[in-house]
Length: 154
Image (cartoon, rainbow, N blue to C red; front, side, top):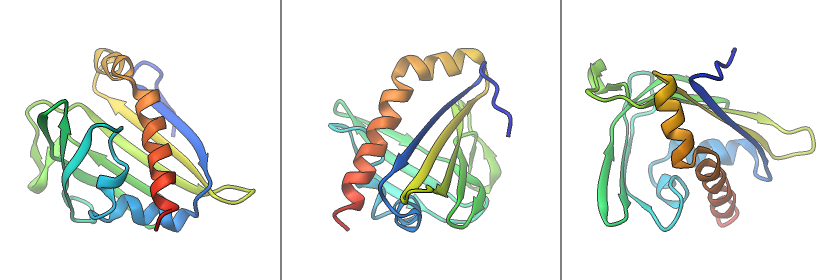
């Protein structure tokens, strides 16, 4: 996959967690609230229908406001890749204001653990810049840290 620096942001880190545990955390609605948004924000709801076209819906509480994100899975490779987008809702209904498509790629790290790569693709350079300014790197870094912390409690 070739990245477009004008519209794509990517983040890679090696996590000291087995790939199957990372996968389970990302594909089970009971796990998502424990890591998916940087604290003190929180996930208050999550619905997952883990199939292409299936829903990946979350509800966040950010600074006392509720934010709903609806989306679908575009690609699933068991244990290795999740691609989801807010450009569509279930039933392939187009979203009125899509923001991004996320690709989560997982592979085994040579020394153990998981190579964890998140790529966010945006519709425009402006949307990419907005996401970067919102704190893409710090935010996804915090999510990765919280995922590791949570995975070690399971």
